[in-house]
Image (tube, rainbow, N blue to C red; front, top):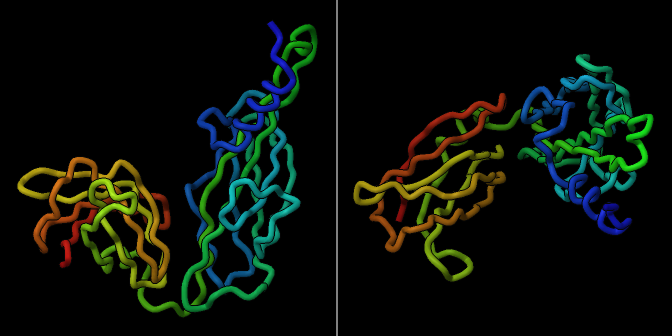
Length: 247
């Protein structure tokens, strides 16, 4: 049974726009930190597959639908297109163009790595649907001279329980007074001996606040109740921390 052109195109596009766990080309690291004073930083890619892979890389400012030709991120990435042999690696060079960015806080961008497997040859090529796989990680531009340290930022967060924006249930609100982004893999509160954990991770930008739903929590805990959360450091590692709810 043959797929219609529309169905095949839709499937390929959906897979193109989503990060895939089946990609053979791996980015070595889950985030990139670009110190403002550096001329360039390098990013290592590894092809763990048994066949060559054609790779295209580009940055975006937060919109996952931005294509390489529409990228407006203030960086140059070389090589933008490369072929990686099986079980081999490739180093990408990322250079800041100098376009003005805030100097009193971090800025965040996204690195996209699109892998296109080679087309099959022979009899099987006729009914073959070629899929492209994309990986996407954060790139933090960190100006020099920012106060404090990024590793200390998670300990300076402020926490409150507030009504959810949709009017249903309660959420854990996090306020970030630091100039650094703080990312989480887990967060929750402990109330009356029971833990209420948000089903999602997330990130709070410098000077911003974000709310994360707490399923099952019916009443706001008292001020001083414990907040358990796991922050992600510059190396992609999990750091378990505790905080206190504020009024």
